[in-house]
Image (cartoon, rainbow, N blue to C red; front, side, top):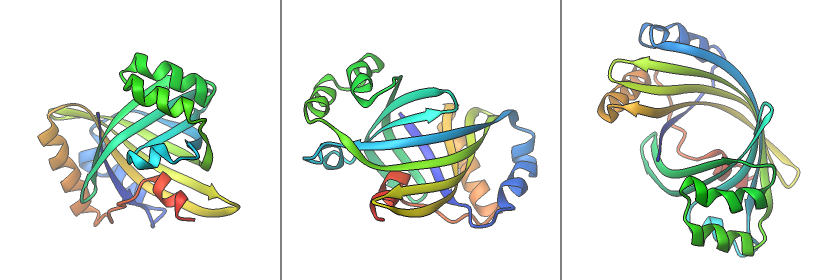
Length: 198
């Protein structure tokens, strides 16, 4: 299960301000930069869209990962989804392996039989921080790059805060504090949804 907050990052200095703030700076365990290049897929019959999901192959530095997201829910900045990931070099390999990671077998078989094709893509750099906070762990990420569809391009400038473990209540309280302290603007749409609107 993925539990995630997403905000816009219109100010290029915002990332550094957040990282140096007291509630965040004290919680940072590890920081790293990841170059991410993703291709999103759907079947010609739009099976992924119909289940309000997302299907992609994303290269994360030197690792290629297939991800299937399902059952998106949204409350303000927070989104909760079923998320399944496996290391795979192609969307076909990924759909064959995803049931081993808990993804529904029938869904993967249906998508594989539907012959998924690329529908859009993203390319961005992620500055990611692992946070160990009082009562919970989370990942805080700052994404900067572009999304592409049908020859059109739009920028990516966003902040993501994803729950990892521990108290969900403390995680949500931390997110609310962060949002208020920095007057963060909610980004209600996923990268996929925004790319598909191009």
